[in-house]
Length: 133
Image 1 (cartoon, helix red, strand yellow):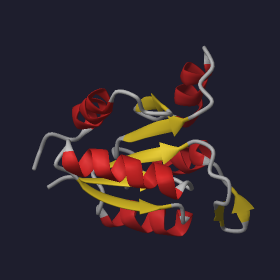
Image 2 (cartoon, one colour):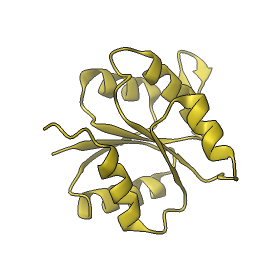
Image 3 (cartoon, one colour):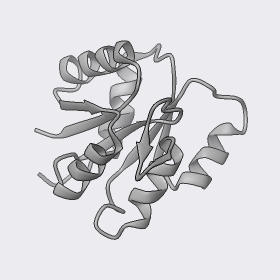
Image 4 (cartoon, one colour):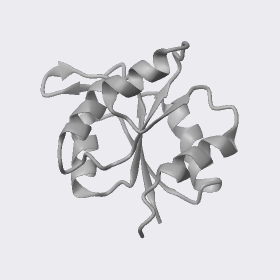
């Protein structure tokens, strides 16, 4: 069973996403906003894909505040985790933001909040999952 790591600082969003992904997607879900933990899970290969909230209000890594873009950049720059698919999740989606966020971060995809179409949300994640079991 594939595992989605949800990096999200809003417990309600986390709950909603988890429910959709487990019920509709048949996926395993982990959730955290602790950047150290994100890195640990990514390096251990314990997640097949990451849903990364762009605006993490409280996340700090090695003493510095980081957002989802920064964490994505760190994961993509590390040979050990660079192939892990990362989907950015953001509530502040203006035209053009999407391209900027993707370019800036090196992420593989992009989802806007609120998620209205649950099936499309699941399909988008399933489409980026590595195919090998």
